[in-house]
Image 1 (cartoon, rainbow over the protein chains, first blue to last red):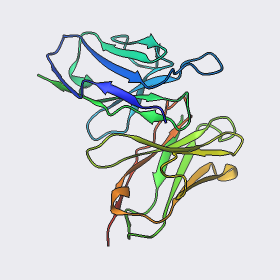
Image 2 (spheres, rainbow over the protein chains, first blue to last red):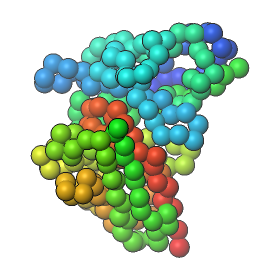
Image 3 (cartoon, chains in turn cyan, yellow):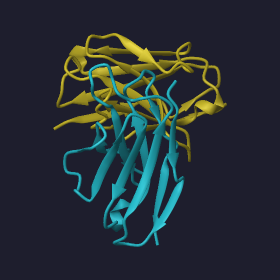
Image 4 (spheres, rainbow over the protein chains, first blue to last red):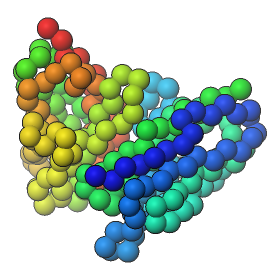
Length: 112
Length: 115
């Protein structure tokens, strides 16, 4: 199974700051169809996860452009520019290139 | 409007079988895959399995021997059955649209395994 290593496990940032979260996979996430199925999700406290980014860098519907995703092959990054209070929660990366799909261990974002 | 809603018992006894239903609306099960994902209290997300649009399935290798996912297209429902439950199966269980999409999620259903 593909192992997703997500860092850091937690972050504490002030409103308006920028942060980055890393997700590294144990094997390439490039699918045989040429696409890379790496998503980023945000789970606000007490809520279901919601998708932020799909296929590495595509913004989900209604997601503010403060969020951006970059990366390729085995190394991926989620960046949040100008953090807002509503951004607190746990961020998850998930690969859907190889079955079984696998999640990172999550990054908890706290607001200072 | 796309919606998914999980339903099922909140409490299951050890060694028993868990049966959950995901009722979807706003899309067809023949057009979108549906995945099941669970989250133990205070822990991360674990992908359990998927039912593809064609009706075939794929499972987490760690759960494969205990897990079954099926559907009723006419009722827009996806079913999860998992046997031989143990306390470590206590979790919130979610269904989500897509296999690579994960664009819509249900509210989740908390399942406690306890005698």
